[in-house]
Image 1 (cartoon, helix red, strand yellow):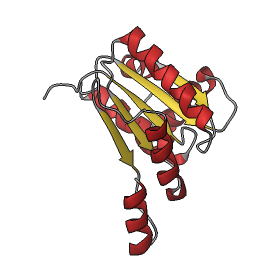
Image 2: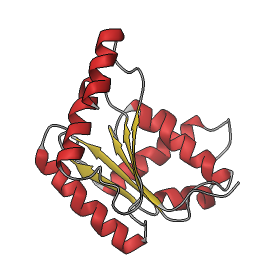
Image 3: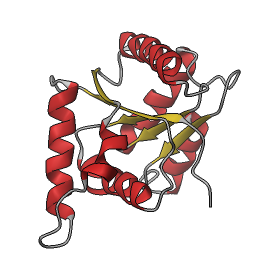
Image 4: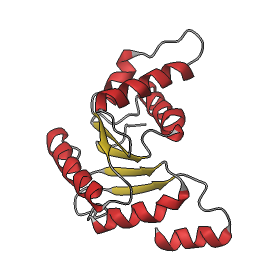
Length: 171
């Protein structure tokens, strides 16, 4: 199996439990399997005030705690993940955050040759799914004129059938 094409992964809810407990270990395991894209940018969006270095350090520290006893984070596997970790402070309901994200994605794509490929991962409470999807669309970030754009919605998708149908309409 070949690694996927170059891409940026934008994680909404970058400081949350899903990012630390699921997404980062999954990326680490993809690196272990040789299935991480050769060119990858990991952009975290959250309302907290922190630097990219602080975010990367916290993710690595948490990853170390999830590995089996005595196993240290393998720097060769961590390096392609950490190489381009960028934290963007932004409120999910603020149009300005999406304008900043658009600029950051354009700069990162140009610098790293990501071919316009972006995964938007919503590791947030379901009340933000419609808001984030709408703001991405309003900012033009859903356009697939160059590369692919994918929106990943973390479950649960609503709290009952009616709310799931409403979310589906919004997204």
